[in-house]
Image (tube, rainbow, N blue to C red):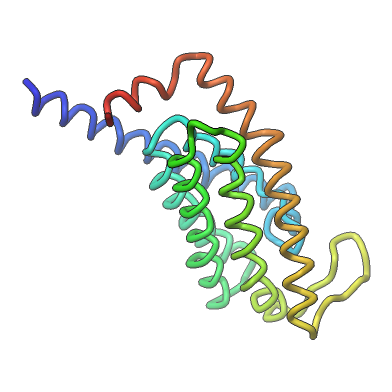
Length: 197
């Protein structure tokens, strides 16, 4: 009987990870279509990052969010026409999401501290490669302005660190935290944690 329960728990884990991956990828692509550069440019409000809060509820969110980010960044690479430079986002953007989600799961008993994981990971990692990617496309201006930051990497990184950090914090805390709280009130997450033990 024990192997059957273990198999059922494993199947549930894989199914949840797949659902979270699909949800993350779809939400990212919708945001890119409607928010355009605000979803992937120097100032980022990637709404799908709110789903990192699901790592407060289930460990399946860690691979789910990572796979979803890889899929979304591969699709965005084609939509935005970034070419091979888009692979930077696929590799390092997905790494930031993985590290943030992993931190979130490990620190889940302290939700505010846990949700800082995705904020810090994205704020530190994304601005490190984004200037290279955006300069490859021929621009690096602050959205809705004519302020160009091109040419001096340290300024581009500093601006990206602040802008990406603020955008990530707004999305994770304003959307993700209430989402996780609502799902927890519905009883989601606790049974999964018990099953994984």
